[in-house]
Length: 112
Length: 115
Image 1 (cartoon, rainbow over the protein chains, first blue to last red):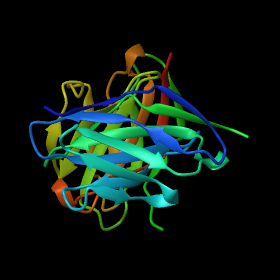
Image 2: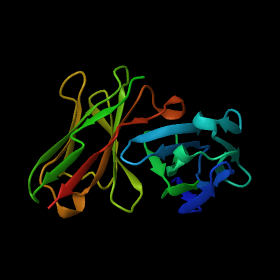
Image 3: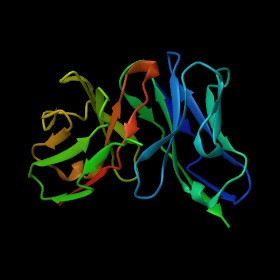
């Protein structure tokens, strides 16, 4: 079975400062890993995905994540937060099958 | 850019009533999914559907639930007799392929409230 643990339920940053969202995964297979974002009253939008190519994955809106097998981590970062980054972020793991397993989510607030 | 759409955005129903949640996947996608998120809980997988058959379902997806692709564009989730605990946000997703090459694209969700 596969699962993810998002280590922070809430992250608050100032605009222009770096954002770090932490995710650890557990999988008995070589997993596919994703980060999705959900803005208020919107659907889940894919930020980026890792599928065993480059370990540093670049996504949309300046986000990137690094797959570290030795640490079973897939942390999401952005060098400079923008007010529009305020949202809920989900780390997601998938095996080579049909279903995604979601983390509990991290709520990001951005202070002006 | 193509996107997954869902209707209605909010559905209120009485306990014991049947509801049908509708989804229009991205047009060239072949794999379809339903997930749900109970308020304050994780997003949970319900069911996957391919080639007019259920591929996989979770233990949540009991006999009260069914899915159908009634025509070439819609994908529906039916709850036969709703319970209070069915209140949740329901997300539809679609993918062009499955497995490592596939990426699931999600709709905006339908908020179901059972009274």
